[in-house]
Image (cartoon, rainbow, N blue to C red):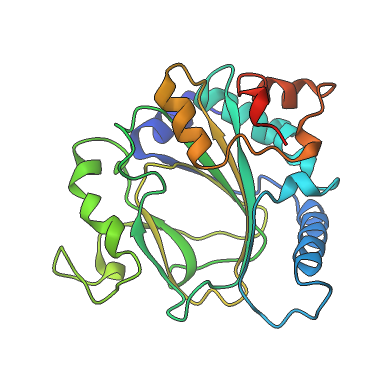
Length: 256
């Protein structure tokens, strides 16, 4: 259960790092199930360290699908988003998606609307990371205006490290590196500016996404734009109360 101080930390800085959320044994089981999904996506071929991105991810695995219903995740999200939050999908990422092995500063939801509709990404790490070796870096408080708008120029150049709108390269911009070990989890507001620098050859993580209760049309439009309504068949199971709660506010006509 989160303390009032932890909730205030998330609201103020835009992120929360929870060490040891999952045990070593649990991570072993999760890693095995995740590796199986990545193996299936490769058609059973050997792992040669290539980049793989699969979405949706956990919904396709009986071993992983229960993560969203786990008290340690579900109740934490409930504390941060309030009642009637909705499911935003999942993804599984392995390796580095580019030759520079970095992902420049950006926010996940740029230019849509004012960052008042809270959406959270939960990063569950399967490999350790360090500041200059795959750690997620965040700019605390950058999910809040006016800081949020002052950083907007970073979004279109996240894949162009030679461009330096603030006069210094990406790794030198002010930020906080969230170094983790397997079992740690990062909860962060998707409007928060973040980046990754350094080796990611074997970086593996699962991301779970949630959003506050949608109340106006633009909330639904934003969710649909990013695939939140594309439920895997396992999430159209009305007998699971927590799954039902996370999906019943989203339009049923968009279910596959």
